[in-house]
Length: 81
Image (cartoon, rainbow, N blue to C red; front, side, top):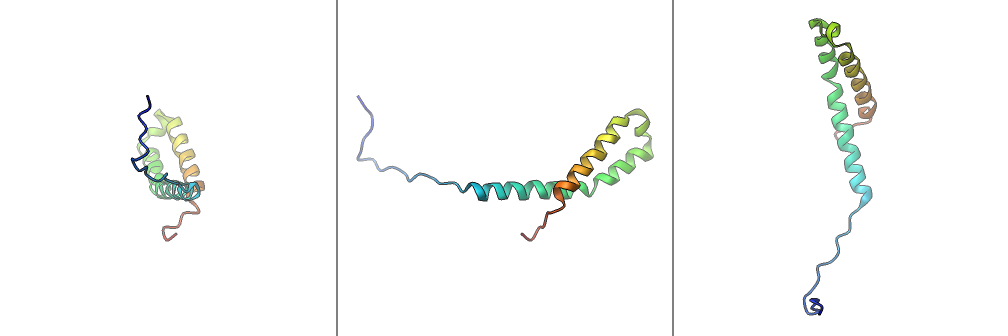
């Protein structure tokens, strides 16, 4: 036996606008990357000043790479869009 009752109204199917979701995601990633690229040079300078570069050189290299990636991803960010 089926439990389907045709007298119960169905809710309309929700439609998602994939383009709008993709644009929102792109803007969010760009904004986070932009704002992350601002303090990262200060963190890199702090690691150089405290001597962390001698004990963990890969950490400093990783921070530089993250800073470059953030700068590349965030260069088109505009908060007024």
